[in-house]
Image 1 (cartoon, helix red, strand yellow):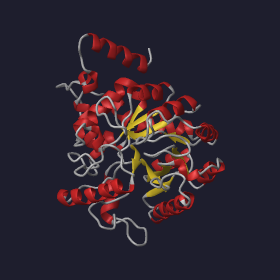
Image 2: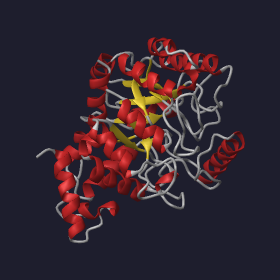
Image 3: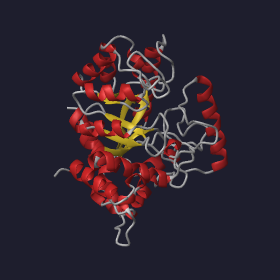
Amino acid sequence: MNRRTFMTNTALAAAAVGVNLSSGGAFASTSSATRISREQYNDWFVFDGLGVLYDINDPTGGIQDNWRMTERLRRDVLASGLSCYRQTTGAPFPAYPGDDAFEQAVTILSQHQKLIDANSDVLTLVRTFNDIEQAQKDNKVAVTLGFQNSHVIGDNLDHIDTFKHLGVLTMQLTYNGQNQIGGGANTNPRLPLTEFGHKVVEKMNESNVLIDLSHSGERTCLEALAASKAPVTISHSGCRALADFPRNKTDKELRLLADRGGLFGVYFMPFLAPNSKANSDHLVAHIEHAINVCGEDHVSIGTDGGYTGIDDMEKVQQSTDKMTQHRLDNGAAAAGEKIGNLNFMPDIVGPDQFYKLANKLADRGHSSTRIEKVLGLNAYNLMKEVWK
């Protein structure tokens, strides 16, 4: 019996006796729960499916004029235990067709590469999977680049290879709006993967580009999953069964993703709570629900945030509200984004967030083997498979 069959049978048996798995009922805390030691954690491959090098306490973001990270940012990133993260690049916000999206993508891509080059004692740009392995040996953080909106390729499939050669190994098909590929989370969920979208999926498969279906509308997501011949990721999302927001994924999407070998990353975002006031308990609940639906080999994390602690929560709330208002004004915001949100888990935020999450899962009775998979090993295996 494989893990997916075991988890399915466990869910059916639990339902028969009235255990609510969606709220984590199968993973009750036990007095014999084994804590994850620092030594054990430090040996793990820890992956963030969507992160950013940014110090929210610093007006410069923690990036100096010469593209060097401040000591605070450098210290917190290294202290986090992070092995690899995916950095958003490209131009996610402009609505399709956007005449300058390609040029914006190239410019932003160049800026991220300058940042990596300027901090090469700490960071390594991932161009092949071998770079991830080498970064591990060199005790550096591997940075893989990814788009959050593939509208930047326009109507030219060759641009997929162009961007891949520039270091973009993961491409999200849509952002919140509609583009030439399909529908995003803010659009009608019945919008299909377009005829051109099918060609995009085929081309990304041929080029060994990892397809990301975060932010996609439901039909576009399901049709892309069915069309792809390679495993795909939903790198940063939540479970619709626990919080009914368009940014979150239905169980139907999660099952098909896992059945086709893909990976679901749970984000550290307000959409994990029905009232958009999420904390790490919501995070754990979504991870557990995803394990119930997908199996432990198909679940990961993608914070959609950074790695520094918070010095002044009130000040950060004000800056977050300002950013949220900007996103609302320019149409980039998703349903559920509102003033008062915090785009991180306030009770574990900071360089210890992954270690704290590991032990919250341990306290719920999850094995160290499973926790290691969720924190990075599953992502490691997926990237190794797709980036041949």
